[in-house]
Length: 250
Ligand code: PEP
Image (tube, rainbow, N blue to C red; front, side):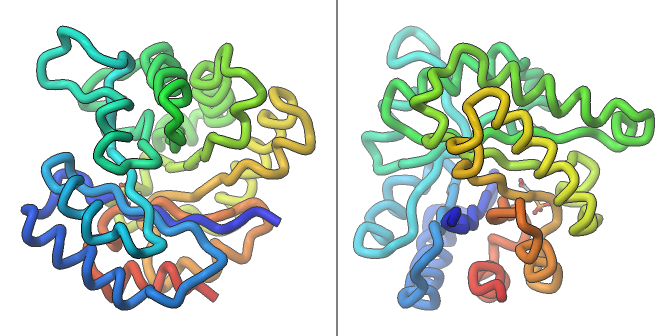
């Protein structure tokens, strides 16, 4: 019913030449793959080159960040319109590294969501709790706030343009993955929130990805969960073999 989606977040890695080699490798390795949305998010400096390599492939391009305005005096920032102009279809929003290292608030994230949607791009909204928030019993309240605040005043007609990525902060880049049961519990919880916001039909169609140390050896079990519709992959997306195996989940 929901088309699976696998997204590779290359973060601040790879020169342009390295990014081109990775994109070319993925394109050849995954040329025949259908029935899934495959997306890569290179660093800004590699976007144009990777877009050219992937132009005749089924792999789409995402940006890792944007600024919530179409243009203007925002030195060093990039707008959704500019990202769309170089071939990006998606943009990550609210990644925990941006929340933590760059103090991004839910209100700022909401502004990015709106600007992206107005520009005709598809936001991948990342939410997730820290270990302390999970262990102190505040996990569901935090996830609910992150979801509702990020989607505030977003017209239900955009419900299907949104992808959500549940990324427990304690699992990102740590080698610790949520168990498939933990992931499913939260994904079901997020879907219930989406149902309240957008109604049952739309909520059943929104993809909810899991992110946090997804690897070739845990993807199959995660994807077997009814509410896990795909994965947002960091470290393991930097190698053709690992990312391809993840994309070819069983
Ligand atoms: C991420 O970058 O969003 C991520 C989940 O990283 P990793 O797969 O390395 O944990």
